[in-house]
Length: 427
Image (cartoon, rainbow, N blue to C red; front, top):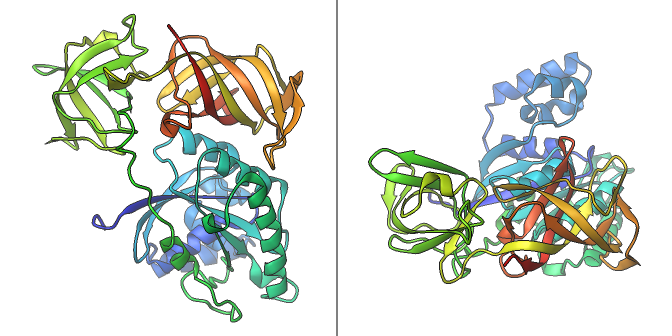
C-alpha cells in the first residue's frame, strides 16, 4: 500500500444522487468490507424498509444517519486501485465539502461528481461544479448514476442527454474536455464500478479504471516555502518546536525562517535546526509532510497557530486588505458591507470585515451580473474587498494557491468559500 502514490478524491453532487452508495459499492468491490458485514447491513436495512440504503450504510455507520438516510459525518475511507492508494473524502453537503477542501487535511487531487440519470442537473450540481472549479480541482469524473433506474432501464439516450447537460455546465465554468471523464454507473446494482455489468453498450472505462486515468500533480516544491503552524510546543532540552504541514516549497536544516504575522512586530526570525516527522529526524521536508521543527532564536510566546513560516528573503504576505472571489453557500439572510464573519484559511481563523462588494457574478459562468450591489445572498458569487480585523497571512491564489483558499464561517456553519485574487500588503 505504502509504495503506491496517494491521491485524495472528493465525492460531490446533489444530496440524493447516490454518493454514499457509490462509495459503499467501491469499497465493497475493492475488498474493503467483509461480505458477511454487508449481508448483516442488508438484513437490517430490509427490516427497516430501507433496502436501497444498505450500501450507503456501510459508510454511514452512525446510528442517527441510518434513521434519517442522510450523510452527516464526513467519512474518510481508503481503497486501492491498480495505480493509486486512494483516500475518499465523502462530503455530506457542499458546506462541509468546502470546509474540508480548504481547512481539512486534504487539497483534493480530483473530484467525482455524481449526477443521477433520472434527475439530471440540479441546483446543487451547478453549485458543486462552480465550487470545484473555484477551489482549484483540475480533474473530475462525472458519474452518471442510477442508470438502472431510467425508463427504459440502462437507457443510453438518457445517459447521453444528461452528459450533454453536464458538459455544457462544465464548459460554462471553464473546464476543458481533457479535464473531465463521463461514465455511466449503477451504484446500487454495482454496474461499471469494477466490471461493466449490464451496461452492455458502454465501451469506455469503468469507474475504477477512470480513477487511474487521473494524474497526480507534482508536489509544489518549486514555489517558495510556506509552512502554516498548527501548534507550538516547548520541549525540555530542545526549545521551541512549532508543528504543522508544509504546504509549498522545501524546508531544510540550517534555513533562516521568518514567522508571520507572529506576536513580534515585523515577524519572528530563527534558524531551522532539526526536522522531525513521525518521531524520526529527516533531512528535508516536502509539501504534504507534517513536521515538528526545532527552531533556534524564537521564544514559544512569539509564535502561535495560524502563523506561517517562510524564507527570510521571501516572507509570507501579511494582508492589510485583499480582494477575493467568493461563493455564498448558505447564509440565512443577506451579506452586506460591514459583515464580519470568521475566515478559515489553512490553520488561521481570523474575523474579517466585508469592506466592499464590488461585483456580483453569475455562479454558473463567472460573468459579471451587477457592479457594486447592495448585498449578496445564498447562491451568489461575488468579488469582494476584505479587511482582516487582525494581521493574517494570505497569498494570491495565482501565486500560491495553497494559501489562497478560505472558508467563511458564521453561526456554526460554512456560509461561503473563496479564493484570494489580490493582496494589499500590511506595512
